[in-house]
Length: 491
Ligand SMILES: Cc1cc2nc3c(=O)[nH]c(=O)nc-3n(C[C@H](O)[C@H](O)[C@H](O)COP(=O)(O)O)c2cc1C
Image (cartoon, rainbow, N blue to C red; front, side, top):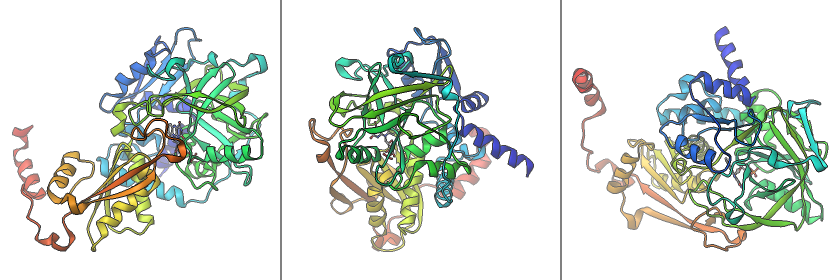
């Protein structure tokens, strides 16, 4: 019992402090320390190489030329199940489960967290980021080694993105609820930042509300923070709900926040670098393109809001938390998405979901034990329109439960043998999209970004499923028995 209690404390500790997380990564041998790489394309390209390895390590870049040696950039891979699991507060044992079993365990944890009472943040007076405070003339955002991640970032502007894994804090002026969201942040000038929020984001709603009354929107952005706050910000919560309360639920204790001197916004005490500022009405500047998670520079260059920076606070030797996107990750990052879709299907009353997998955020696969006519279509259509199942996914597949949805070969086999395209592909038109979508024609205004979605019903036809030809291959029992007998020769 005692050991379990100690372990729980340890887990929660590293979730709440980025520097303890770095120590944890080192302990488990999943941290590459790289000294001397240049901020200008070298960090981004090295990450492309490291992050594309199977089960990659995290990378900590320091001694970046032109900067104090301890100023650092940390990047966590989104395609390492082990790292993603530990960063989600799962145990070591859970972190190495087979993929679908791991998604099942994560889904249960996420459901437990959702059902827990929310815990309000607690205001504290002091935080490490108050070690250094720059205001007025002293503000210089170029004092941090923000990488130029990709060759075409910012187009001719050759922009540096300080914010890739940053948390943007805004407030709804009507309800007073503070919102956390991850929106990319580009440096325009030493005291001016560019912000890209797609139209359905809470930060955008809050901005529109402030600007409708002619007022600037106060905003605080943290560039490096604890993992729980980051996780809460990454998730879509109902607008009326604060991510801080959700993060408190995960931590089982309040998130400690400092009240921003200029904005009055609650800022997580764990932050490494904090910017406070204002988004002015009608002030736009060209932003982008940026190498986005879909694997394209798809949002192009467009006028987007800017942040006029009033203060910059940072810890001694600050660490930027980077979350650049890799094409390799288009098929990575599946666990949280899959678990979230699974939970939402269950919340909608879809029975007998046996597994969910997400090929990145582009394809969702749901496995069910078919119970009644229309069950497969119901699962597919609902999954395709849940928020986590529709962020990028144009295609949702439903398979029978003899198919492991994380096994792409098995999924393709089911598609090729159990589908009659004329019957089994259902199209949903005018579904939501964004300008990140490479299939949205260039120049389309945000309000007109639509896509269609398709559900592929790759289950055996319900009405004759019991007469469907028997699949070849040995039964799992015979296979296992034979393997056990011959394994010394098979190796
Ligand atoms: C690494 C990363 C980068 C992201 N970048 C952006 C972005 O630039 N703009 C955007 O609108 N959403 C972006 N998102 C998605 C939002 O952060 C996410 O949808 C979040 O739930 C939004 O919160 P909100 O609904 O409270 O606005 C990003 C997410 C991640 C994980």
